[in-house]
Amino acid sequence: MDELTVIRQQINGLNDQLAGLLLQRLHLVQEVAKIKQQKDLPILDKQRESEILNELGAKSSDPTTSRYLRTIFEAIMSASRDAEASIKK
Image 1: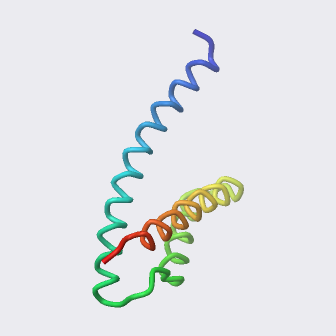
Image 2: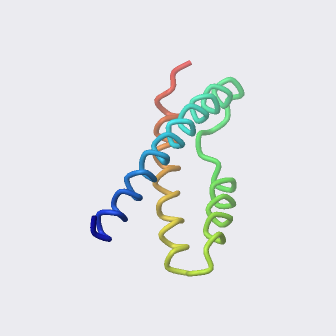
């Protein structure tokens, strides 16, 4: 097995783990949406998202990697807001 195949297999394993974690996160997002609806709170909390993105960006000392990590989580948060908006009372 060549090096590229080995690395791709590792990536596939990580993809499976990430999918499982993202499904768990979406379940929690649904719970958050229900609570926000009960309390009449907005879906978007800009301050919280900004704090989270800053914390996640700081996990890497490399500015490029930090930027990519932030971009990935911006997409996750956007999808989470969409999921929250789709929850009906």
